Image (cartoon, rainbow, N blue to C red):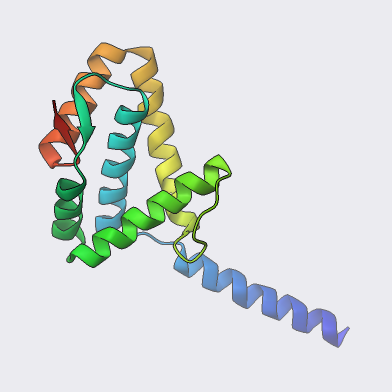
Amino acid sequence: MKIKLTVIALLATIAAGQAHAAMLTDAEATFLDQLATAAAVLEQRCAGYEADGAGGVQLGARLLGSPNAAMAMVGAFDAAIKAHDGSDYDPQKFRPEVSEAAGKTFKRVRAELISDPDRACAEYGDSSAALGLLRRY
């Protein structure tokens, strides 16, 4: 019985730590939403847009306070994509809260891109380009 209580206490401590760690700041959530939106535009092959890596890092640095913080979020987003696809990823970069939030945004934007591609590609592509995540070609 004592072992069972110890295990329950340990699991409760771990779960509480994970729940606390599973919070995105407002700036992280904003940047992640913008990354996932731009990724959906590229995934749906909206004509006239390509990734702007330098612009994305600059945007992230403005929102998150440094280029390192921006790159860390890009790395977490990359790990989330790879984990979702079943590819190898760096588990140290994986953040479940990033995966969950990015997945929700991506699904929502992708559904709009599929249902009304002309309007959604223009809307999401242009807004991502204005933010610096994408560029027009």
